[in-house]
Length: 154
Image (cartoon, rainbow, N blue to C red; front, side, top):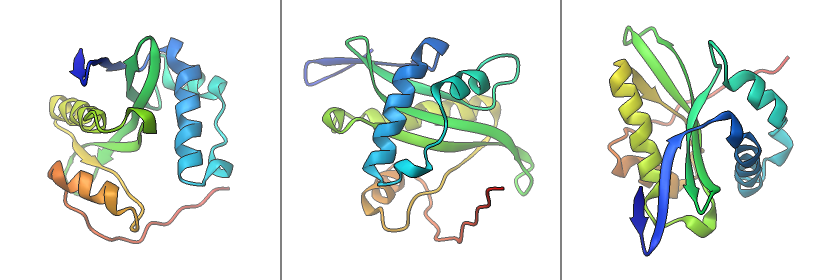
């Protein structure tokens, strides 16, 4: 439990019962970044890929009064240059009305703890013009490098 300004929050691993709320938060993030047209995953697909013997993704949610108010999702693979597991942060988002409570930092610390337990390297990308996010990540000790990212969808 996290208490901040008389509000109580809990952070825990995402469970199947969270899928609808998670998808709503994902829509909030996509709207916030004016990229809703890129969000094509359905709640059903999230449930199908996030649970079972070998989930494709994992994550944490922030809960307040039985409602989800933030999340962080990640995948795990192998980072060849470091010779270790790599956790790649996919999304981190806190509903704007619940910001300034340190929840984003708490979510990132959960990711870092997971990485530490797996002896994993953590990586993620951020839009170059998102100075607020860059400053946030740097406060957490991240090294920011501008690199060209490419993507392809078939």
